[in-house]
Image (cartoon, rainbow, N blue to C red; front, side, top):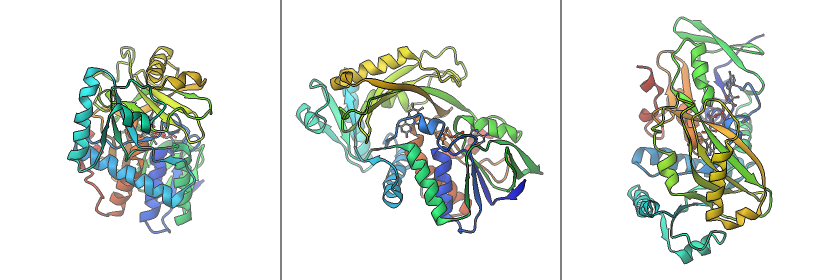
Length: 393
Ligand SMILES: Cc1cc2nc3c(=O)[nH]c(=O)nc-3n(C[C@H](O)[C@H](O)[C@H](O)COP(=O)(O)OP(=O)(O)OC[C@H]3O[C@@H](n4cnc5c(N)ncnc54)[C@H](O)[C@@H]3O)c2cc1C
């Protein structure tokens, strides 16, 4: 079968779903947008992750990206509903001396961006989060963070897109297998089910993004899977109310890795604890990081270390049985910034990928930046640092 589309989005994770949602908002409702995923919608990393909506204040650029996006999440929840969204705020916990020194530094970073955060003493900390061990020496509370359930959010965005534009087609279980070219440009996307004639394609395939580019004869963009082990407790009442994370998480998770991501047998991996209350009860516990290719086997040793840290901070969690553990693959880009924008060597080919451990947080702004650029509208924030062309040299 041959059909036509104005735009084909490949990959129905949280990023592809957000791209479709924002395209549907900005373009005329006659625009035919087809989303293809080779599996179920949000069936890959976007359902094997946590849902911390995190504002990172390290510098003006990353603050603009994450803050705008987390604010957009709030609006999406108000407009669309249909997914769990909990504005818990985030507590950054410090234990070691090195970590305690980070508390005022992080506090100042929020102030430098014109935002607010609160350094808490032990009493304030106990009042805010009674589930915490009583001897935590220091913590910072940032009220602007929250938690979502990403699989439901992806579905809500796609339903919202179809409500605004009846020409949005969502096609799960439909792998893209190749492309047809017309000179430099794309002429069609070849899928398992049809050939879709189109000039505009968005590659939102998470850790599989490089392989899609290769189908077009392009060099692999440097996105590598970075495994994270997670565990969830039974649906008892959650022992915590707030999104909790060790402050060292920032050092560990949000800096470019000094491990070569291609040396998958050499990365011993690391962890910093991250705990999330679930709206249906229970507590989601992570989070480890390790480069070891596409393997999704749980690394019991690393997971155990995370769980011990969780018990240290929240003793009550030891009473709740772990009912499931699993691995998700973060799409890590080699310079630790996502790729959002056109892939210049192939006109009409766009990339929205490489968000590592912040893809849920950054999904709304990613979709908006792609849609604004395709629609020829001035982007809400400067997209320059994220343009994929930095890897096309
Ligand atoms: C353990 C862990 C914890 C995390 N915690 C957080 C957090 O608290 N907060 C946060 O902001 N982020 C978090 N993340 C990061 C976040 O989950 C990811 O950045 C995000 O889910 C990536 O979304 P995506 O849409 O790019 O990729 P995916 O969800 O993997 O979607 C890509 C899609 O492309 C499809 N695809 C692949 N090849 C093809 C093909 N040939 N044809 C058609 N479709 C194809 C796949 O089937 C898949 O559905 C975490 C990640 C992990 C692993």
